Image (cartoon, rainbow, N blue to C red; front, side):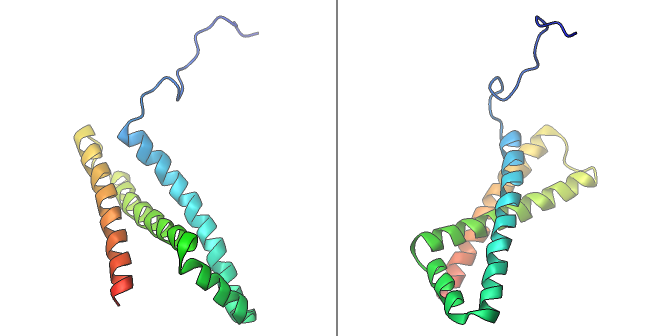
Length: 127
């Protein structure tokens, strides 16, 4: 039998959010969003081969309004997950574990993901 008066471990309600924990949570969430996006993309590919009119309707949805916002959000999640994944590869190699480097690379991941997304949106509209 366990002692009901034993101290409990602190949990998320006790800790102050830190850049490192937020980036870790965001990496997991973006992975889930990307998986959902792949399902939508697969459905669209299936529609292209079987029902061209339905595929055109889905493409039209993603070309404007809420669909465009969702597409741009998916694009950002891809860029963030890619940049943070590269950061994790360096960690797998044993590089960048000291706290100042972790914070610098975390900030860099966010900046590069935003710049990549902005560049892709800009060049997508220009061309």
